[in-house]
Image (cartoon, rainbow, N blue to C red; front, side, top):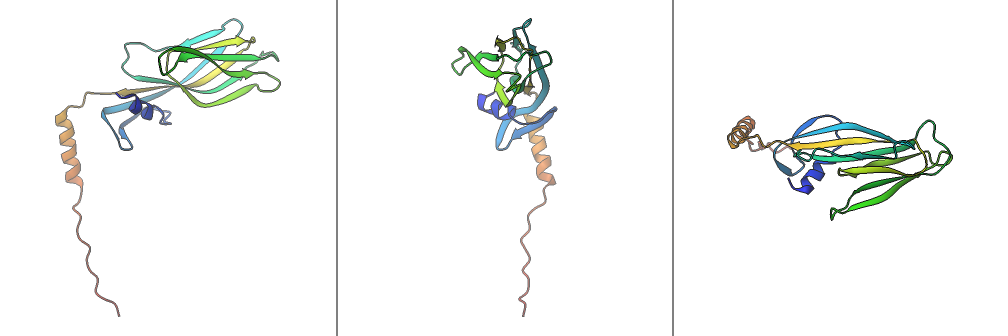
Length: 175
């Protein structure tokens, strides 16, 4: 599947399992199943990093949409720098700080569905946390099980259900 089509399907804001035949004018080879699962992890002085990864043999497109970073109970009033390690468009690993949380001035940060493609590692670069990271794990799967005969039959049934378009009747002239 083309990366653009997968991205278009992955960004749909569906929270549950959905089956569709295409998005807008986008046609895809088979039925598409989209799943969205809650994601969460906690970084602290004891657990300074967490890696989110998926099975390599999986043919589905996976996306991690981050929604919130927040300090949780027991956090000290210190700077907590959270860093994300992921791959860029050239498939090179890069590390980028995404938040600097402090209990007295910015205890939480909304990331508004910040999209990352797994594998992704979160690191507590400085501070002792605990920092809670939440979001959604979105999975888009395209089934290629639809045979040509079934799609032709479906098209014929759809055409049979449509009524023919009749010309409009002319109305007589009014005085």
